[in-house]
Length: 147
Image 1: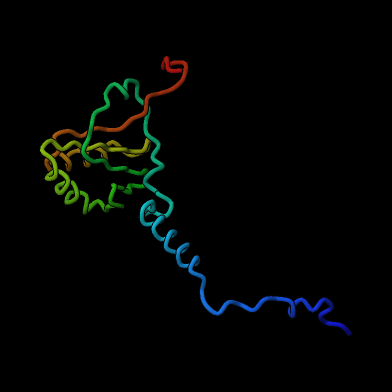
Image 2 (image 1 turned 45 degrees about the horizontal axis):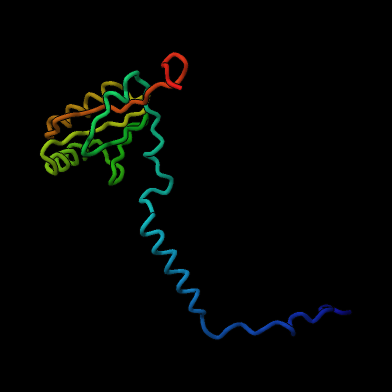
């Protein structure tokens, strides 16, 4: 009985004795790519905030020095990562010291309670922020007059 009819294993080249230099170059380029363009979040959970809609939201736009994103679940995300409610006041104090006229943008999801927003706003004012701005989207549709 023939178990290896084509004798393919005898025609294969032997494996190389050393690692190819291109392997290390390729691994280095991948590491540099992830260091330059990587994120500290695997799925970027702070980026899926659904903002409320308000007429005139673009007209009320202003420049801010830092921002936070508040989820429905109560999670608070900054540019530096997720913060607990206990660490928020310290973080706000540190950011308020960085600028002469600090302004905070709160990107709160539609279902965040108003009481939570007022708590965050009062923490920001006590930390030294001059302005606190709530983010909103301009409504699009036939009733808003937008295309």
